[in-house]
Image 1 (spheres, helix red, strand yellow):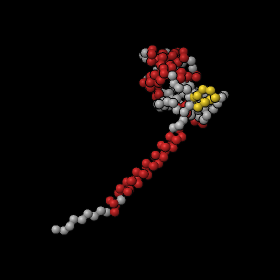
Image 2: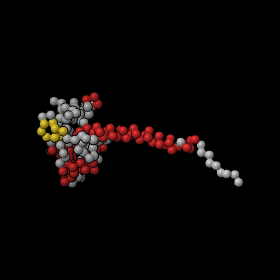
Image 3: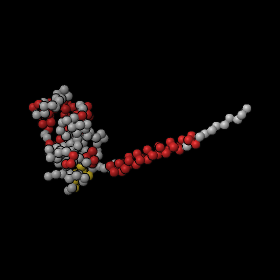
Image 4: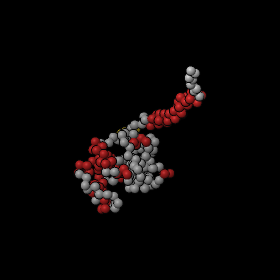
Length: 185
């Protein structure tokens, strides 16, 4: 009876080496990308204003945190953004939506950043600084009287949720200078 021999081709011998090389070729650049982003933005936190004093961005009050959940549940993020675009990428500052472009530090304290999907309604990044509480409440209950013809009415939302949503919208402020972006006067 002849002896059984196994002929392993050179390709089979090098298959593990080839797969390890492909894995490393994909994993190392991806890891470098993640780690470089973490090193640049992971340490961002609150910073003092130009004259010292309070740290910015301010922490969200408890009622505003509840309002954030209402904002998400009502789907507001599908029509509104929360980022003031720089001058070369839009006319947000000229339109009065903010006094400076949004920067990464503005979102450093947020567990879920609500930048938005598309901007059908006005940008809300600095909404709390641009409007009064009465205007926000009117917009939510009777949008037509406030001139927002296409905005849905949220009369069906109970009073506690509406109060929390108003607190969240009023907390949206980017009216402070940031080390990365100065306020336009």
